[in-house]
Length: 335
Image (cartoon, rainbow, N blue to C red; front, side, top):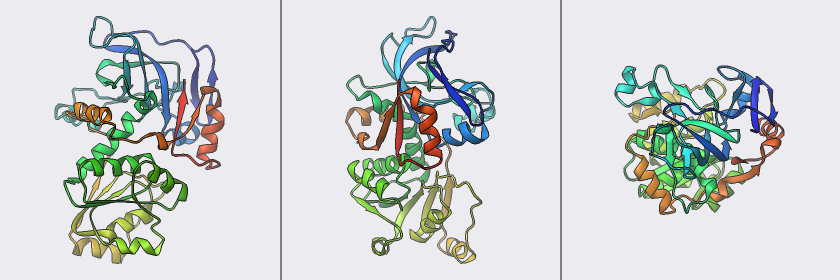
């Protein structure tokens, strides 16, 4: 099979005849159709490497069942599925509480075991998400980020009121979509990049703003702020814009130390704010809800897809994404 294989930091290339995965108990073989390039894939492939090499990256992907798990009739050949990448141990204390992203000994598609930058991928049956058959196949590659954004909103405790999201990347836009689904009184999405705001607007986010513009100050305070930009400045702005006893929930990861100025830290205390961190997703009890939202067409995902490329262009495009030579929201491998 064809696969984009990582041999070490900065050393990855297309292999035309990589061994096809062999079935094992509890795992199904998926013929990959679309696989998204996540922001976390860039440093993994170019700087840090993975947990072992060689490895096939890619944890945001969908495809069709090529071979069901041995002895199982849960999925049929040809069914449309997406993969959720976290593989918990199911035995540690966190797993016993169904807090799988806090698992002490987890596996992970695309970083600890082979993922979806290939024609085929072996996926635990429990990690397969059944997709609506009439849905655009490309949208299946968004199931993991959709789940991350849902977990972000759930963790915030948001139920009503006004929400402000910093960062109009895929996670920020999906967070804004969830806030709208949850019936927010107002949803504002802020980003410095004009191109990102244009994509958000095409995706149905009406209130978009550059936080450096004067217009930003006219929006007033918000009941909940979401930092999805991975920016120190965005975190500080979140603390400024959230209302008294409000909640700031953080999913963005800066590459440098996060520093809160003394004056802003005092304001954080006086306003009695809550800052919450999130990591990954928790889809326990959520699959049916997510499926229904997809079936109802509640996510306008097409504008987020900025490129569809074959695996053969992977090395060039990934390097250009990392060096910011090209603008992107979500790049998909079409396999």
